[in-house]
Length: 229
Image (tube, rainbow, N blue to C red; front, top):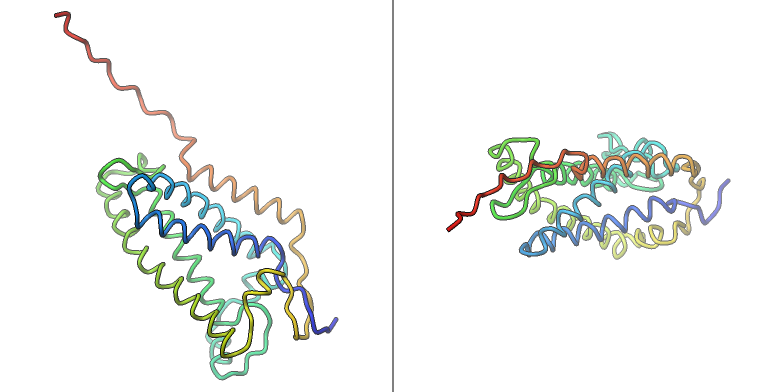
């Protein structure tokens, strides 16, 4: 049915978006400050892993405009968009490219963090599964990608502001309300309760696996005998 107001983003997609934004900001700040915040940094990383896992599942099981197939940025779509001829709904081709880039970068970032160490007091929850030299390499990747992540987040914010100011296309409001005003098209369908339960369950399982809670407890340190004298 055509209308001037359509349901664009489902609630799970909107919650994911804002929770991920808060988590990424918190991860960047705690990682840059370090010190006592490094333990919090690790916990935020687990939350991001859960959010990413949820989004990947939701990209196949969610509602219309949340599905990856809806906004996968093929070269043909990007060319049409750059020529000013794109008329779709949801993420435009460059926005879709940004989404996939962020998901990929965050996945590499958090996975490397699971095995990282800071040579002082912090080790990732899966550090024990690999040797120290590999952990050091992954720690370097984790630190390097943090700068790339910051740059990509800043670019994302600039793009949203550009659309709002110059193209008069408010991308923020629909991500808050779920509704897109002044357009014609079909409202989003799908992504019901069963899909939501499956996505949340898989996300929870991924967080549990990443937390290392399933690893056996390390053996106790040998007792040290105290001299009788």
